[in-house]
Amino acid sequence: MSRLGHQGGMALISWLVTLCVVGTLVLMVIRLAPVYIEAYEIGSILQSMASDSQLGNPTRREVWETFKKRLDINDIKYIVRSDLAMNEVAGGLQLIVAYQARVHLLGNLDAVASFRKEAVIRK
Image 1 (cartoon, rainbow, N blue to C red):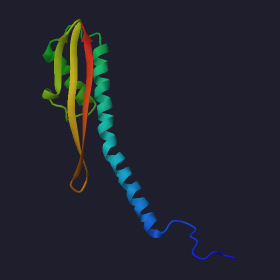
Image 2 (cartoon, rainbow, N blue to C red):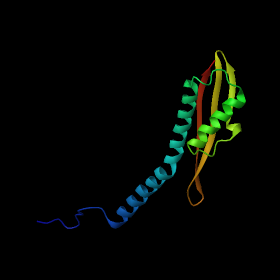
Image 3 (cartoon, rainbow, N blue to C red):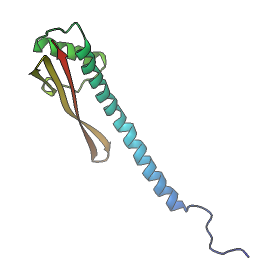
């Protein structure tokens, strides 16, 4: 009464395909996680600058110097001066950090993530 041809589990090829897919996803998470952690830190820096009472009425140069010091403290090296825009708005100075991060995944495949973080320093 046994059924001939009944399979009890996945074949070897099915396991290999599954492992390749899972391995690729794990690789992507490992490579992209630092990029998103860095973006979170940049947003945190902007928010801390917006709530800092010592930055009452800063010049653009003072804002850049303070921002650069906080980037150095957090070991963020890929933000340059042109990534930070400062606009006068009612009641303060709006800071906008817009940048792209490129991460090598494997072979000739790269991932590009675009980020935009904003904060307003009140006068």
